[in-house]
Length: 79
Image (cartoon, rainbow, N blue to C red; front, side):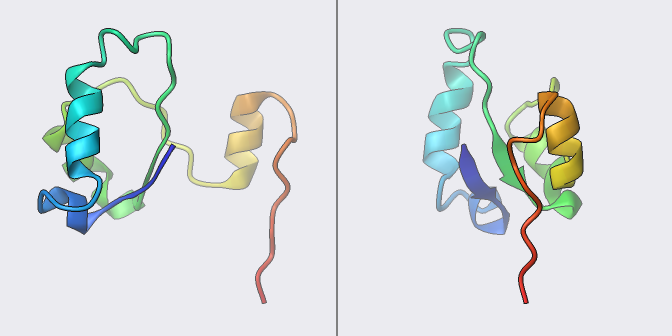
């Protein structure tokens, strides 16, 4: 899990080196799920920069639970 890939990484800072290494070695990691937290407005830029074509966009805890097939994560409300 990398939380979060954003403008800093798009400008080749932050986690960009780590993500570059992961994406160069993705053939060896083919059985491993990689979870990237990306703001919805940056998904296209991130997927294009790192050549990510096979992904699932999950934009809420409800969708995540549906994808996982259970309810292991509860919706947290912040006041």
